Length: 138
Image (tube, rainbow, N blue to C red; front, top):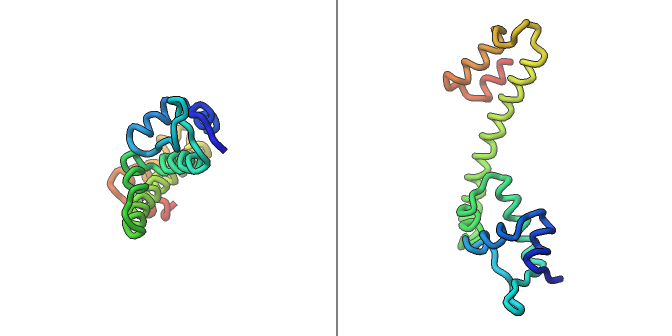
C-alpha cells in the first residue's frame, strides 16, 4: 500500500509538517516522488511508529537518528541500554511522586504538609536519598 504525506500523517494523527521535519533531520524519507509529491510505503508506517514510540521512551530526534543509523547491533544495544536506564530513573521518580500524592490524599492530618511522615519522605528525597530507599521505608 502507498500513502501520500497527508495519508501517512493522518494515520498517526500528525500534522504533515511533522513528517517533513523528520525528513529534514534524516529520520524519514519518501519511497519516491510522483509528480513532485511524496509517496510512502508500508516500511514508512513502521518507521513513523518507531519514531513515536522512541519519543515516548524519551529519545530525542538526534538520538533516534543515531539509533536508526547505528552501524552494528552492539552500538544499537548500547544506545537502548542508556535510554532504558533513563526510563527506569523516570519511573522511580514518578513512583515517588505517586506515593507522595497518594499519601497526601489519604493522610489523616488536617493538612498533609504538617504530616511528619509526608515531611520525612519529602526531606529524604531532597537530601539526595535514593528514591528506592525513600519508598522502602514507607
